[in-house]
Image (cartoon, rainbow over all chains, first blue to last red; front, side):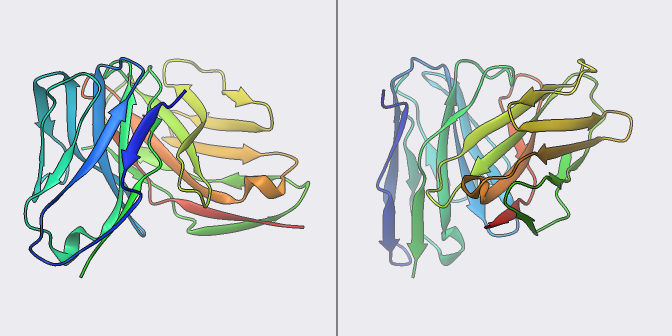
Length: 114
Length: 114
C-alpha cells in the first residue's frame, strides 16, 4: 500500500535551475495539494487540485506551476529556483476537498537552493 | 481569514506523565474541522485526532484527547501516559468549506524525557 509517493526525497538546486517534484497517489483520490514547510511557519498551501484538469492557487503560489493530467499524478514545477524556495515540500491527497475526508501526506522533499 | 496559533514552540514531558499542547484559532465560520498532526523525525505527517466543530463532545483516540472550547476558539491536545515515541513536532490545523485547504499552526516540538 504505497499511499502518496513523492520523489525525490532530497534535492539541491542552483539558483535559476528548474525542476519538477513528483507526486503520485494510488488511492483514486480526487483532491491533491502541495504544501511547503518552513521553520516557525507551519505548512502553507501552494497549489491544489479538485480533480483531473482542474488546479487552483493556494496561499503561496508564486514561483510554482502545477498541472493535473491524471487522477494519480500532481507534479509541482519550479521554473527558476530561488533561495527563498529552500523548504520541505509535502504533497497530500484526500478523497474529496471536504475536510471530513482524511488527508494523506507524502514523506516530503527537502529542497535546498544555493 | 482564518488563522491558527500555537504559542508554545517547545514543550517537554517526563515519560508516563501527561502534557497539554495549546492551540487557538480564529474564524467567522460555524462549520469546520480541527486537527492535530504529529510529525516525527522521519517527516511523515500523521493524523492524531480530529474534531468536528458541530460536535460538543471532545474527541479521544487512546492516549490522545482534545479540549475543544468553541466559544473561546481553543483546541488543546492532551497526551496521557507519554511515551518516548510521542516525541515529535505537533501541528494544529483548521479545515473548512470545499477548497480542501488546511491552515496550520507554527508547530510545537515535544520532547519526552526518560
